[in-house]
Image 1 (cartoon, rainbow, N blue to C red):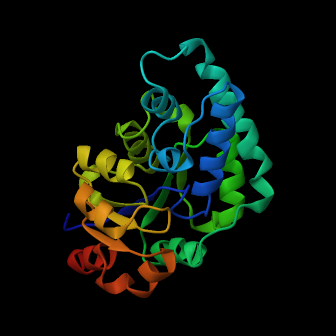
Image 2 (image 1 turned 60 degrees about the vertical axis):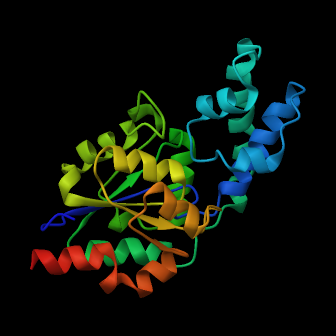
Amino acid sequence: MATSLRGVLFDVDGTLVDSTYFHTLAWWHGFRRFGHDVRMNEIHRLVGMGGQKIVERLLGPERDASQDSEILDTHAAVFSTFWPHLRPFDGARDLLGRCKEAGLSVVLASSAREQDLSVLRSVVDAEGSVDAATSSADADEPKPAPDILEAALRAGGLEASEVVFVGDAVWDVQASSALGIPTIGLACGGYSAAELEEAGAAEVFASPRELLVGFGGSLIGRGLSAAE
């Protein structure tokens, strides 16, 4: 942990917004459109990974790759129908505000499409606490590659040694670990605390609200204390 914490990077889908299972269902529809019978639990285990990687992992190298772009488009189209139903996790807005009040830069390190990100940001409703944000357009390779976190660091004018990352998926932890950034895992996106810890999360909380309640003793709070 750096002695001078300057910022916090936040994943959005599944971390601040309760969207993981909507993504699962949207992917299911995308696969079914082309006759692929993929179980939802298999899809869910990959949500948080880049879309193209999800298709490759679930359908394998022998698939008809000419369908890939239409599967991705179908997922995006179906997910957009769920926009009105998206809700922030309890404490998400207050957690961002607490980080901002502590003098930290807050960067949304999202790999969502720009259209989805706009909706997700409105759902969280914490624009006054957000200094910068990324979308899928900012990364050449999706998670678990660290590209989106590198983009988030650039957007926030931060160094990897100066931040903590908050995410909900093992892919978040893997991407963060590749840059030496400690991860606070939130078990609200569907991955268990044990899975997040096994992936390398430094600590795990059940939700944004729980992290907010334990803020002072968390990596963030301890990083602030060390910098004083």
